[in-house]
Image (cartoon, rainbow, N blue to C red; front, side, top):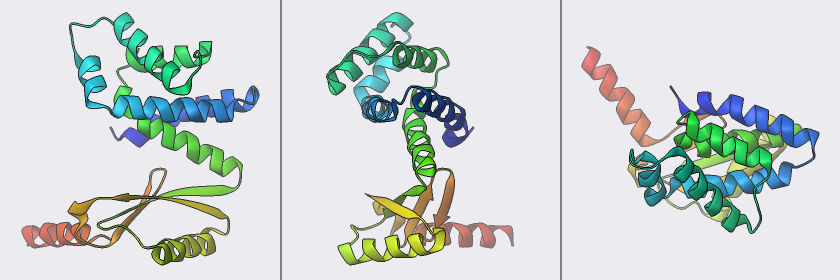
Length: 182
């Protein structure tokens, strides 16, 4: 199952909770820290280790996030970490964070996009992309860029689970599939 599909219900639930108790910035910081921590290879190995108990995993993740954000986790944040570990969804944390930020943007009538390119985009290229997306979506647009050398050229633009892939890699892959069918 696609991580964005798994992430949406979690992100929506967090967004509703954050909206009720006006803790959106706190949840945003929490999810950003959790995302960074769960992306670490040592953390992944620790979580995957069958020799470690759920309590040990929970204690480590909670301590790392608390230390990163310089505060104690709330009961809801602790419950969230527990839920993620019990449901074996630690790999979806980054997608949950992205879906949460997307929900926040939608509520603020703005949109966040991730632009992945083979090379670092110049400031003028980034500005052109922002202008195009702003014009198309008729709202405020924020763009986060990422480099993926495997693309060879072109860009991939993501908003939540929507993807526009104009990369050379995607075109070559499509051509390869087309030729293999015939």
